Length: 452
Image 1 (cartoon, rainbow, N blue to C red):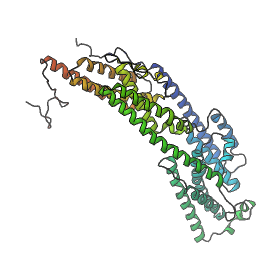
Image 2: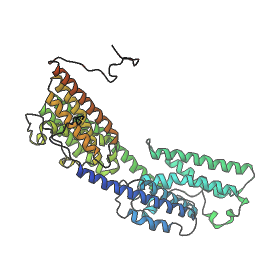
Image 3: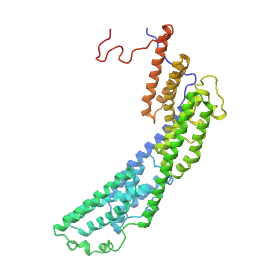
Image 4: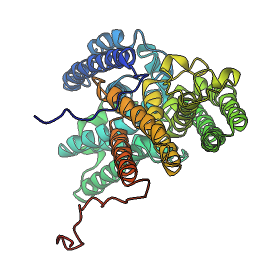
């Protein structure tokens, strides 16, 4: 009978069961948010059919109340609830236009939706409503209602004039902004086509109603200019915070990378100094920015420095023990210890950041194994393979792995170390001589023919 597969069991197996339970709980909340989002979408669609009617939005506001009850200001919403909020205020803005002919202000909306963000207001109430006005204009043009089409075009024009002052970066807001000019172009085309077919304000009784009197685009401001200017100033400030975060993150990430290089060189003092520098950067410079603007928590630069810090801490503990960074104690041999997420008391980590650093750790263990393999230290290579296998096994045991894209790199590292051990076993069997193994084509030449 064939023997069992050769396994490399680590003495200090990595247990991620606690973290797995936390990830599962977060995922359950996300799924609940998705279900809620689907329900809100139905309510929005039903309310849209009654747009323009008195009290059309009351049912929607009552439905949304419990959604926002536990939300915090400037807190990222779960799942796609932010998109639903944009849909809601988009409809609110359209309803407000039908009642007043103007753009609804942020202060008016926050009475019903206290946690509405500036970005959601701009995306939904300002940019999104222009799409509704485009369709509205097409419908009114069908019955040759020039006054209503002109009212819609005037509001979209003022919205675009304000948005031209904003500096939108590549992202959702930038893409939605592009739709505003297309809406304006469509409404202007409708007005032109109506004019060349002889349509005038006198063609419709709408111009004779009291509603027409409230739409005086020549003498009134259709948008809440002061509030919009305040939004612009706040968003400019957030852009400054973002730029500052990116710059300072580079400094912290550089210190963490250099500490890993120092670990490979065996320079423990330099490693601790650099790690302290990175830790201070995170605590004193980056975290205050993230606390002020929580949406920057998921910025790639901030996540990158946290993952690099985690990787360096994990690698140092794996080499020298979990007390290495606290008191400088260094074990005489590789400890093989893995820090848990709870061990990072100095920084508040999310599961994705810890697991990202854990995956990257296997690359450093692989580099360490190459160094020791060059010195013919077979036991160190075996220990390295045990560590990588333990990490891979722990990651694969997660019911939901947030760093799925990095798993393939961990598998490749494991396979490389297995090949390295095989090479060393051949060398040992040949009396210490270096016996290179064939590559992955198993002795075939470039044309696929068997070599002699």
